[in-house]
Length: 402
Image 1 (cartoon, one colour):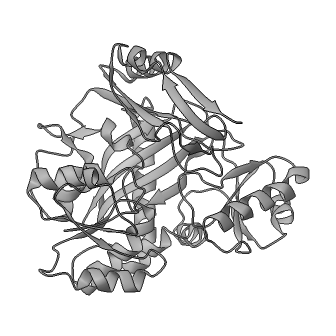
Image 2 (cartoon, helix red, strand yellow):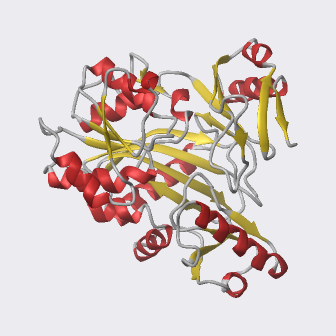
């Protein structure tokens, strides 16, 4: 099978390990060289995310022909869908995959299907202040094609709208996008947020986990810091959330593979904030395990794509969570101290530093990475959250700004 993944992805090594476990011949299709430690014995090939048709055609010429083509993140979902179509592999239609890469088009499709979501409108160059005024403050302004909360900023007043637009357009430019492209302006939905991790099989959504985000995400930026599962919301609300996400996948035409959705639980009920045709980002998937054998999320994704039997889709642990260590300021990372003390906290299972010491670091909304990921397990989500917070209190991030 073929894994489409950017060269800087956190996910490559975990998918390679899953393929090794299943004894699957994996080809890693990327836009640059992945570290040899990530690739293992897997083959690699070059693709160009700016040329999806060309990249898909290259994948389709692999011999022997792949049995499945999957993407590890948003940037590769269109290439994977196109290659699957060329190979006559059952997968998400190209139009459905493409709709998840354009947030404005996605909003239109969801509106047509009656899916609950924020009010929205597009703003051309210099129009954010006027459009925000029509939507109403506070509102959220975001690029159409970036992910991981990059470039997403809350605007509370007309006085800050113009500066916010300029900042977002600079972020788009730095991401090799069109600085004059219309930006998406959405009404801000207050209330707690959850993430829904699911698997589509024949168009039917199978919820793998609903993850609470205990830290408020009220802006001005929307950096996620903690996921804990199972969710502590009631069964009735969780069913509403499931139906909302199922309706969204149907509205976009998604039928196969992993989905990751962000849902706000507002005063009028759940509203869909985002949905993507891939699994949870970063190393957060390591907080989840499934079935009687405690299989990884990546194993689950590969099994589903190859129609291989497994030990089940139910979570294998009573409760689990992950803390994403945010970048507090721009500069150069000198060290992350207190890791041994954090790992000594009851319930903490692992820490992975993802930016080496000595490297430059940039926080959101310009940045798109975390310093590391801290994992915990316990008998209840409350216990997991306590462990993660206690462990975080032991960590000291040292960043030089000179």
